[in-house]
View (tube, rainbow, N blue to C red):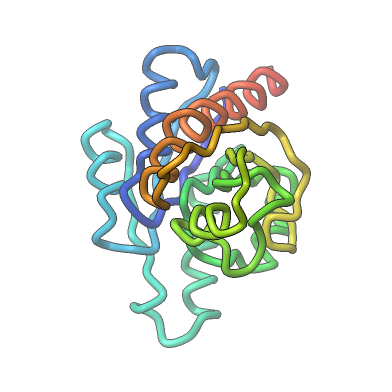
Length: 197
C-alpha cells in the first residue's frame, strides 16, 4: 500500500481527482493518509474532511520565522510517515531538508509542458497568461519529481492541451485542469504505487 500525503494551498481540484481515483480504483494500492495546507481557508481542507481524510493547516503566518514553520511542517509530515508526498497546487517553496529526507518521494503537478513556462514566478494563472502572451498553440501539464530547483526534477508524465482561439487565462486554466492535470496526476500516483507493488 502506497501511503500518500497531499499538500495543497487552494481549492483542491487536483486533490479531488486523487480522492476520486482512489475511491474508483483507478489509483490502485494507494491510501491518502493526510492533507496539509499552508492556508487555513483552503477549500481543499473541506474536501479532505468530507472524504474522511485527516486534514492539517500549517500556515507560515502562525510562526515567528520561516525556520519554525519549516520545522512544524516537517514534524507533521514525519508524524504521518508518507511513502509519497504529492504537491497538488502547493504554493510553498519546500525546505531543502525536506527534499533531502524525501528524495525521489515528492511529486508536483505543474500547469505547462515543462520546460516551457516554469520556474520561479510561474504558478496559477501566471502560467496561462504567459502561454497566451507567447502565442503558443499547445500547452498542457507536467507531473515531475521535486528536487532543489523550481520545476527542474525528473519528468514523470506530460499531457498536451490545445490552445483555442479566444482563450482567456481562466478558460485555458480550466481546460488544462480538465484535460491534463486531473488525468495525469492520478495516473502518475497509480504508476508509482504499481512500481512499489
